[in-house]
Image 1 (spheres, rainbow, N blue to C red):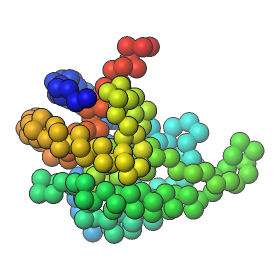
Image 2 (cartoon, rainbow, N blue to C red; image 1 turned 45 degrees about the horizontal axis):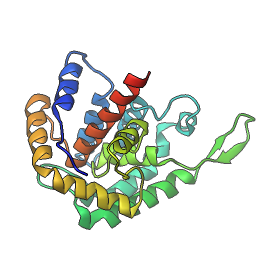
Image 3 (cartoon, rainbow, N blue to C red; image 1 turned 45 degrees about the vertical axis):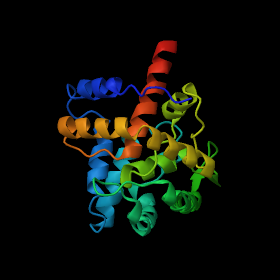
Length: 223
């Protein structure tokens, strides 16, 4: 059941970040702004993507990407160019009619990152399947047409008894139903953040922010 969407915590969260210059959450903004010009040098795009992913936890510990240079992302840049019509901005937001394109984008990015091998703890090269978390963060940071299916986002989604936690067609049906139901609230938040952050946040980025914060807050209370 849908309830009132409380976006005040999101505004408070971003107001708090304003007191911390160069905080890591701004890496999404830098990456997204860089990809506003998809025709620039591939190395610049790949480097910005790599640093954003590092800031957002995808190079930590035993992560497969930690073994690779930024050039592992060059093939992904080519794929992103092919799907650039999904790029969200103030003139264009994705909708349910484009869900199949989003799912196909996921499939092609998965195939790209799955084509590499990585050393295991015995220094044997083995394949490691890319996660929904990685692929969704790449899409969110470049095109803005998918939330990031990470731990906090998924916990926030489950807290509210929704099911859109991965790349399934039924999940995207539910995501866009959520967007349609809360469109007025999301557009209001979008305009308020544009004034305070001087940044256009795509609708699905706002969905990502909302549920990520819900999951983050829930885990903070439990710990």
